[in-house]
Image 1 (tube, rainbow, N blue to C red):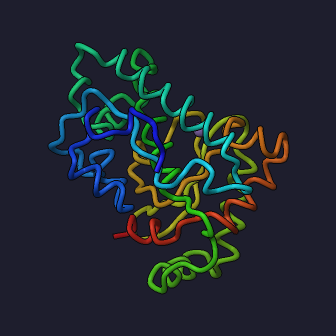
Image 2 (image 1 turned 180 degrees about the horizontal axis):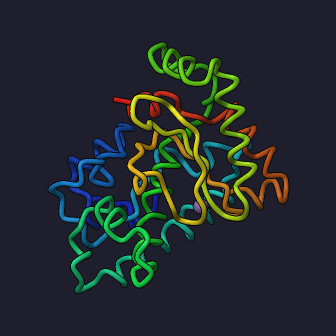
Length: 238
Ligand code: MN
């Protein structure tokens, strides 16, 4: 586990949430999940990484994770806490902030920071050391029903990641009954379009530049083949 103080239970996660997060069921515990209910949100906390900072090396270096998680992801949390303090958003679950502020020009700061917290937490959960390979059978069947083959699914994800102009994200989503690949710019994400995220690839330059410089394709290819946590994707499918 990481040693970042902001990830400790005392900063907002209950001990139970923290243990659940440590066990790998982090997503719902750390963000309130998709239901948008219950948990007091404020202050927003930086959820723990589900692996050590050097665990994805050499595909993604400890240096990249150090900046990406410890600086970028943390900055979104700090910024949202500043922007939300004393407003109706202070105690709102992240998902609700995202869906209620999407598209509102005067709430762009709140939306961008809330969505970026959510997107990054989701991104980390979708990765693991020695990942990639084959998904669990039920998920594989669903992927083959929607894309034909696993390889076609990976290809479509890579293509979305490569053709996202500038900063953004490539996603595997559930849209109605079917699996789909979509891409979003900057902080935007599929919950605002009524789609359920299953996996995401961060294609902001900060995600890969220290390791791959301008070679986004190499980063995406390595991530898809060596890091994807297909069990997490299967859990999201429900
Ligand atoms: Mn990022």
